[in-house]
Length: 254
Length: 247
Image (cartoon, rainbow over all chains, first blue to last red; front, top):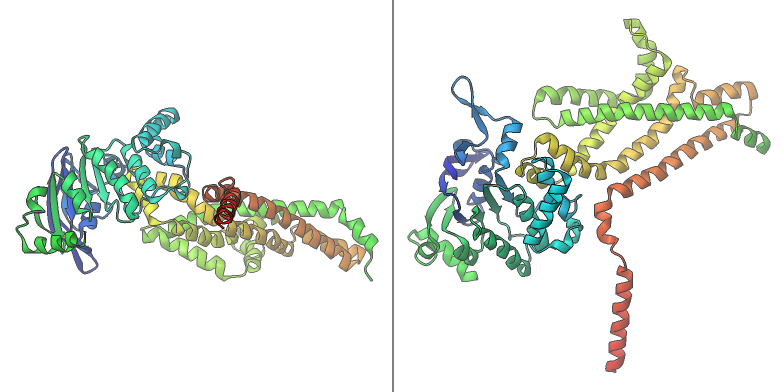
């Protein structure tokens, strides 16, 4: 479903991503962990072309993302319309929620179907109400983001992405900006999603959650994937020394 | 000596009221032109392409860097030398409008930049095109920020329109001057003109306030929750009762 090959990214002279490869199968849940500055968020953002790789390619369900073949046989940047169409298949949930502050919760969820999928207002409303129920926030339909807690905002943000019926969902540290009491409610929503067969790539610090939810955990450091494996393998029996060091640090604190 | 009679008489002078109407019309027309120029220039200045950025920057630099009076005189009196002869109204509208646009461009650009980047990224992530993102997500939020300085600009424009009198446009100030040449009551008639300007700007002030409230709906909503004061009072009373019972 998702195929990233040889991703390199520079921010100025800093080599943030040093040749990252990843293949994610349909319905697979991959969790990426690692220290700050390891490039995991940057890598996630190359998967929907929010950050453009300086080298390498990303394919979603076989389609090359962000580029199209030119007449001369090479590749040129895809048009805005084409890239936007490709992005409809990829949902993204941000650390800072990024709900549209001038719209209510319901309107936020409806925005995609209305503007992009061209649903009628009635269809979009019905769909949005259903998704709001899914994340247990039906009573907050007419609230503005300012009136919602962080956990509630993030659940609305997840519903907003789901409204587009994406093939893949990307989560960029979805609970890192939340107060501890609210982390559980959001993780529960994400866990429910994994059980519905959604293909997901999640960047997080929550190791316990990764243990429960992931089919595969990746450890990234210094712009590279150091080690990957099933949760029971990686977390309890990491082979690489750097992985061991990181896990000791993180689980030691917890 | 101040003559109340003259003052009150000219307060409802149709001649001056018509002049005020012309000033208002001029201001509205120039604002419309200015918004068009300003929005275009703002978007061009934020473009990734230097070919769009540079002409817009030049426009803003040139028209903010020279006095609007000089621009008006050049358009009306100077351009005919190059073969471009524009009438008084066209010159006034063009001069005031294009000048205003340069200032509005900066206001609009600042408003758009003030919208957090995350909003833009979220919209793009659900597959909205650049145009849809601007229309649905960025501009409505930018408007909230832009309305107060924009209203301020319009307020200023209503008074700057008086400069059109220099190129003999028959708006309020010019009519005031013409009237004084006949009536000689300089103080009273100028004060009448000042009152008319004050009425126009004050009325606009009310409109601006309504606009600000309208565009801040989503922010005001959280503070509008009914009975916050009531609930706080209830809490205070309950606490007082409890502490009384305890003692």
